[in-house]
Image 1 (cartoon, rainbow, N blue to C red):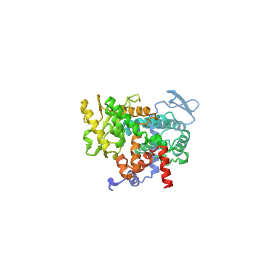
Image 2: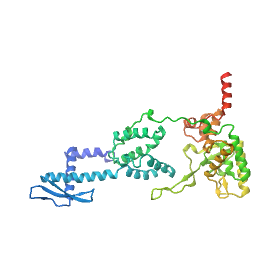
Image 3: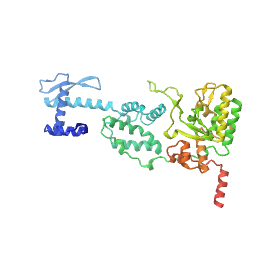
Length: 422
């Protein structure tokens, strides 16, 4: 028999057949051995009273003391002793694998699978929001079944008015903790795989208004003018990150991580990014955020070559000249200040300030990225080329999340008139 190609179950069946034993007989023998262990480890005296009844003391977990037990026969007493210790053992096993305890073990394992501390913090935040203090958190993963989980999923979806995306993100914890329990052979299968919530129960999520997601054609020049005015006043190249973003569509974390060496003619190589870093402290709290540059991008598609327009190249020349004039240098980074590399927080502060100055609602830097991609879509450029420039892995992401109308109402109406009336 080739053991290298034999499963544990096949090996067990082979041994049972050689020993002329059935699986039921083996299970019965194992049960007897376990019962004998309970009786052997019972440390209190067993005696028969003058009334003929058999007595002993059993530990009482609730009081940390002991209680007197009396039964009519020795067999009845032994059976009670066995059941008592079995119950304690099973309860201890279940307590060990309560979801709140097993979650902590799984989270340590999850940390090995990612380089993002912020992702782990997001998971911890979801635990506090959806699981902590709940009945499910007190339930052992060994006791969870389809009925328990199906009811929980339906109830939390309805009570919290979750969208489909929120539901999926929230259930990552229960899905993966149970997968981990299967991996560690605590349970044989993940019962959550059978849970289903009808899409009609999810809160409908409306696509946001275009004007809240992009800078309209009459807003973009005003924002860029504010940035140039601020640069002329302060000399800070962080101001120029804003017009540069309109020309390249880079993520903010990618912009502040750019280096001189990334520029190659009319293209710039995006190959690193700034991330926010936190550390979970022994008391469960999180340390203050720090900003560090890492040598990888958000996704595989994020490592890309992005075309530099004539305007973008002109902005880079201004940045280079300003850095030379002030004598700034920090490991070859482009966006610098007196303290070294500019952080994303500084740039995001400026874009919000410029929005206030021109009298529009505050929009973050990511809305410039949406504006850039929407501009390229409006230009008629092939969607696959746009996807590559944006650093998306799927063009559906480009269309579904980054395609918005940049036109003002008047411009939109003019285009409609032209389209409808030829």
